[in-house]
Length: 449
Image 1: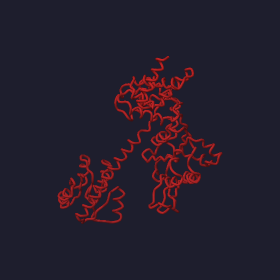
Image 2: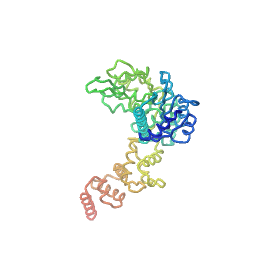
Image 3: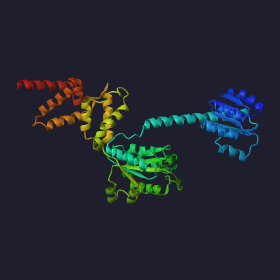
Image 4: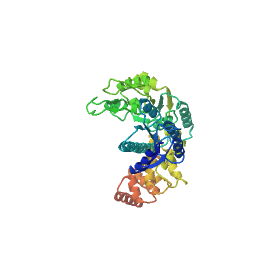
C-alpha cells in the first residue's frame, strides 16, 4: 500500500519516512498540502495520512482535492486539537478515521492495517461484482422480428419510470431477460437486480425468502435473515411466476407495493424499502381471479404496465440469430464461418419449440458438446429431431409393418451418420449387436423377396 504522509512538522516527517516502511508500506512524505496535491496528481496513492492543521492548504482541503483525483483513495487525518466538530468535519469528507496527536506508533500501525484490510475488501467486492456481471451476461434481446421490435420499444418507454411491470408469456420465452433489460435501462441500473421464481420454493419458505425473519421466528430460525426485498432495496426485484404465490403471501405483497413497508417474520417493527417490482407469469391471472386463486386488487396493482412476450414459434425468423448467439456462449472456434449447416438450420426452423428459447438453448448446448468442429450438422442435434423427421417420412407413405418402420429408421440414421454404425446405435437407443442383427434381418428379408 502506497501511503502519502503530509505534515508540516519535520520530526513527524522523518519519523514516518522511517517507520511506515518498517510496517510494510511504501511512503511519500510531503511538508505541506500544496506539495501533497501535486504528488497525488502524479503518483498512484492508496492512502492519505494528513495533518488537519497545516499552513496554507489544510488537511480537509487536501482530502477534497484527493477525492477529485482518486475517488477510491482512503484518507486518515491527524490533529492536535481534537473536538467533536473536528471529527464531524473529517467524517463528512469521507475520511476513514482520525488520530489525535501525540499518537503512538502502535495506534498508527493498527489503523494502517485496518485501512489495508478495507482496501482488500473493496477489491474483493469489485472482483465479485465483475464475476457476477459476467455470469449474468448481457440483457441484449436478440431478434429483428416485428414483435420483438415492439417489445424493445415498450421496454425503452417503461424502463425509466417507476411503474410496476407485468411480463406475460409462455414458459421459457425469456421473461427474466426482459426484466433484466428493464432494470438495465432504468434509473436503478447501478443498483441490485434480484430475481426469484415464486413457484420454485415451498409455501412455508416463500414468505421468509421475500420478507426475511428474526431469530426464533419459527423452528430452525437460529439467526435472523434479510429478505429479498431488503436485499433489492434501491434496485429492482423480479418476481417470476407470480401466479404461484399463496393467497396469504399475495396479501402481504400488496401491502408492500402500496406502502413500501415490510415486516420480517416474527418482528413487530416495519422496515421501509425502496424497490421497483417487475413480475412475470405464464398463467391466465384473470381466470385465476375468477377461480379465487389470485387477488384481484393485487392483479390490478402489478398490472400497471403489461408487456407480452412472443413465443419462439411466433418469431421463428429470429431463430438463426438466436441459435448463433447461444452457440457463441459455448464455442469460440469457427465464429467467422458458418456455424450451422443448412440442413441443421432447416431442422431447427421446422421444429415447433414448445419449450421456447430455453429449449433452444438446451438443444444448442447438446449440439455443441457433440460437435468437434463447426459447423453443427443434423447428426449433432438431439434424437427427437431425427424422430420428428421419421414421423414426417411415415406420414407420406402407405401403411407399413413394424419391421419396415425399423428399417426406414435405420436407413435414415445411417444416411445422417455416414454409415457409422456406433453413432446410429446410440441415436436409436439400441446396442451395436442389436443394430447388426436388424441390418442382417432386413438384408435377408430383402433377398427372400
